[in-house]
Length: 161
Image (tube, rainbow, N blue to C red; front, top):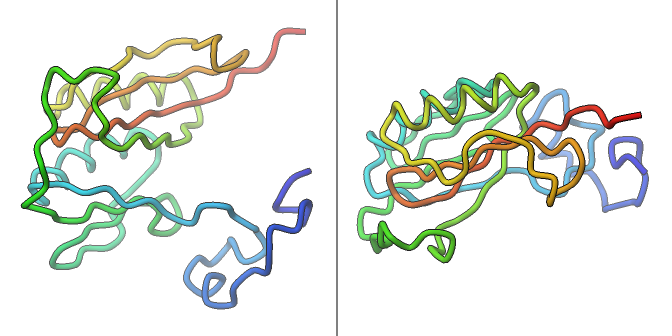
């Protein structure tokens, strides 16, 4: 059942949350926002401005040690952690940086997300394409940001009849 329609009763909607996230007051979201750590906030901000723009995110808030992006409210945060341990570049899939998946509306947006990440200094961790092992119509691209965080953009194609 759709949580926005009240199915599953995941708990009360906070009046505070409704105030912060206008337009979402009747939604019952499981995750409100995600934060990732970055060593260089200015570099990460420039990187994510270029990459997240492709899937409809904009920079919404700037504070001394954090920057937020979102579609309608601040849902993806960068937190400055200059002392953060640098993950090894050759860690591949076993590199334990964070993995965040963000929804895109189209395959073109997923493709643009991946291309923008590479152009902005990120690395590919999986070219855009169908991922049948994740389900029919699962179209995604995976990138690594300059701090080793693994970010995915996904859209879902219509199922075959």
